[in-house]
Image (cartoon, rainbow, N blue to C red; front, side, top):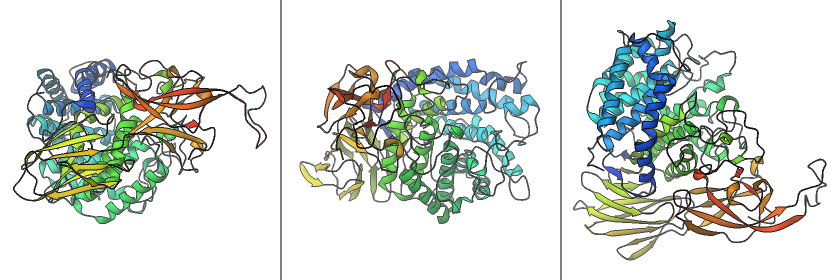
Length: 635
């Protein structure tokens, strides 16, 4: 890949921001080879071009042409169609920043010209409202006007940072100026039913220095929770409008909305220094992780309302776990990591990226999951296009997830490393290079398949500085070796090494990537009496195609797990083998038995093969489960 220019990534804190850590520009951190480079290459070469085709077929571009008056026709699709173009353009922009491309540049130019032509003279822009000649902001609960505006702003910021061209940013600032003159105390007092505008406005403030955008974001945060959103079909909790944000104790309602809002709250804290916002965000994050997060890092346990459930309501078979919710979770945890420097946030980012985000994209790069359930029964009814039983789909009528995946992979380098006044921090491990004004680190690793991470110091200041390496919570027994000298580490924290580093110094981190059984909290009814397999940062599952018996009839027994490299399988994975038994079919009648009696006699012992959950449904669609019952006393 060609040399990259240094450009700010999705989050670029202002000089006055309240933050423990600061992100590096895109181009300063580069993924070069290995697991994530393969996914980024597939995203660039397959997914993003596929997105261009699908957006044209679905009518997204035609809607803007009708709004611009260059095409006769009617609007097609849901009210939020514009946002899918904007997310895709954000992906295109970050890719141009990673490496120039004539095709990507042409796509960006053409789309920018169309968007500019559709914008009205006072700055307003929304193809649905304009083509339906509707009153602006008449349906704040479900109209998505501010949501679409937020994604336009984020695309414009990405375009400006990646290319230096101001055209799309000019469109966004005109719209944002209109919004700043429209909303607020004494003007239109309301908030968007789908949060997203908050993070976008803060980032636009960071890009332009115009404090009006930050003040508008602060207004939207402060106004939330005062029941401004009225709707006959949803209660206030669905919109995160039940209690003021500073009083909230947990995340609730629509999962994507809740987490986009939480990311915006954390952004507002970073630029305002309002500690009550950070305290509220941390409190809600802790409760979410402790009671409302799946083993994969996925969130959202209810199809109804695409929502969080009650504490410990985490069923596997009807888990919603929308891919967009995983992305929103990463965005929020990243902002909390920048604010606090605490390893727990980077740990959740890792879990979520590998196991809740990545399953949303097929290995080929051309198909997508909207919903990421942790179990599919062998005789499951497939009654919705989003149901994983359909396999990944080329596109969706509500196509929020595919371009969201694209923009996340295109900017993934942004989430690997940071700096502070003491030195450099590595949060996620991938082969590549990390550069600052004074440092250069070369990272070699086959993570997540292998736990060895090797770092070479290629440039260093002539003074002591600190290299901080995250030791994941699962990595008890990890070792760190510096120039041949071994030292201890603590899991769930950063190992910090302060010294006068020299060019050529070598650091080796060995993380114990071994398969293990994981049990759930007994309050999670959906997994009581079952265990899951993990290996390093990866969650595993049983797919029917690999098993000698029906997945629904298998139970594990307490014998050691073994792993095996399979370069021929699923693009090259490590599988895990476990011992199990198959229960004989019960007699006809009710599926219950007297307590204390065996449910069914054990028919046979078998060897079970587990594959990484992110890779399931890339061969054939069949029964799958992450959590499997146990036959005997496993911890």
